[in-house]
Image (cartoon, rainbow, N blue to C red):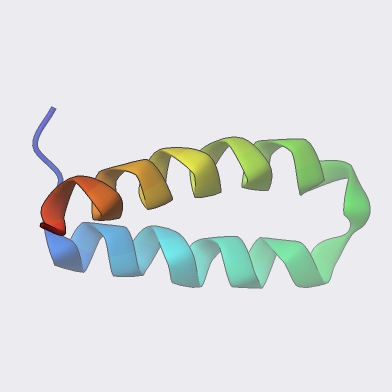
Length: 45
């Protein structure tokens, strides 16, 4: 699955918006955050 940097940033912004709405989304945020950070780590040497 190819994810562009812009899409990652959009996901991150969405996560921030959701996180203000309540704690029940915390697990989802952690899952998406883990995927995003793993993806970003893949771009680094």
